[in-house]
Image (tube, rainbow, N blue to C red):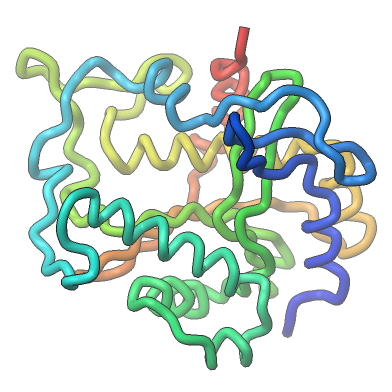
Length: 260
């Protein structure tokens, strides 16, 4: 079963904001005609770092990579440059049909990304779809939004490239394992949980977006927005489905990130 006709258009045209690349790069809300309105909103990554993460430091086993790196991505910030290039390519190709996507020239990580999604039964619909809350003053973008035919659901995908270290080793402070701050104080402060928290916020913003949920239900019978975290590196790919524990904390995480 393919992607329902009109689903891509709905997800694209209901986007409440766009990225602005002017003097103050960031996400801004748009009006019904697509024109920018209001101030540039705060991104969620740095706010999560300052409000949710502990004061501990991550072990080298969590942050170091032992993988071979292609020559094009060696040197200063090579991993970051590679990740951005893959993100951009994945975003562009996610909006194409499967035949066009298969024919396109792709980076290795891009190929691995789409292979992992296909294996999980996830059909890419759009890439870099903005989600925001003007009330909270924050915004982000879903890396990929997919359709899962068996469950008739849309799935938010957070893509992370190159994190080949041990993602579950917690940060430590004075030799003690650290937990995240409230509302996730039951979770270790590790790379996996940091990325999952980011995904939880993105999913929450989408699921509470005025009009989107109701139109998904009315037009396509879609009542569930799932979320998965996809790691892609040279060693392997790993897909982590977001648990109910993290879904339940989405609202509290969004409230915590409110800009005063």
